[in-house]
Length: 123
Figure (cartoon, rainbow, N blue to C red):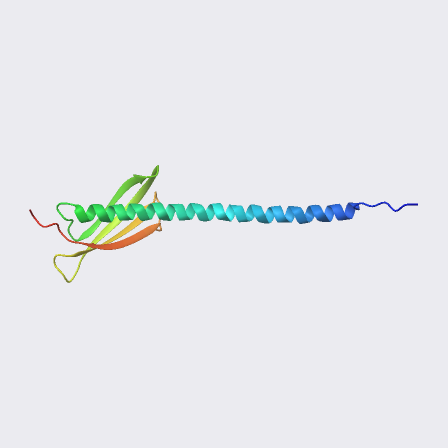
């Protein structure tokens, strides 16, 4: 009698378990990548909002006095909340600008940026 070739039921079940574990690992990896992408997107957009606030502050007339200002802006169909702190420096014609940007009503900033500005000279 000729021996039959093929897979036993046990071999097929083991192969299915291995494939299922591999697919599970790929799914978890893809989910982690999506989360990382969302976090990177949020930080990038918040960084752009912070850069905009710094630029707008540098060209503002009159230049804002020392103190803290808060505001809201919309970018990429999202609402962003920002906080700007204007600080005096050793140079009376220079101010330090610290911006923190928050996603909607988040407690922790998504981005922060610092820069310097001075009042524009009068024409």
